[in-house]
Structures are given as structure tokens and as C-alpha cells.
Amino acid sequence: MSVDTATVKRIASLARIAITDDEAQAMAPELNNILGWIEQLGEVDVTGIEPMTAVIPNTLRLREDVVTEPDQRDLVLANAPQAEHGFFAVPKVIE
Image (tube, rainbow, N blue to C red; front, side, top):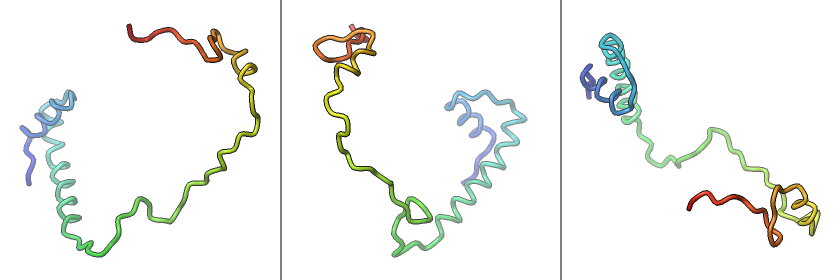
């Protein structure tokens, strides 16, 4: 696959990026190099290799979901600009 300056201009137009003719001419070879690398990566045999999200094994550190300060509603609502029936009251966003 080869990218020419017309294609670069079309991509820039679709992305709403203003580029000059000189910039389009400079970007065409860069995009062709990137596409070449992608084609090389496509040639790599990954049969039997599990997909991964990171190069090192890691896990999220999660804490127990335990209530440590029960029934603080009135204390929390004391900071609210407006509260109704035990809930924060906010102005209507959509009519």
C-alpha cells in the first residue's frame, strides 16, 4: 500500500487538520514508512502466542469493599449546597 499526497490531504481533511502542500509531500513518505512497518509486523508468526496487555505480569491492587464509617449521611449532606429527602439536589440539566 502506498500513500500519495492526495491521500494525505484527504486524511487531513477527514481529520479536520489544515496542512499545506509542502507538509502533505513531507508526510507521504513518513506514512509509507509507518505502513511498511505495519506490513512487517503482519508477517510475524504469532501462532500459539496468547494475547497480552502488558509485557510484565501485573495485577490491580484492590482493597476490600468494606464500610468503615457507617451512617454518615447527615454529616455528608451538611456540605451540600442543596439536599432533599436525604440526597444531593442538583439543577435539572435536560428539560
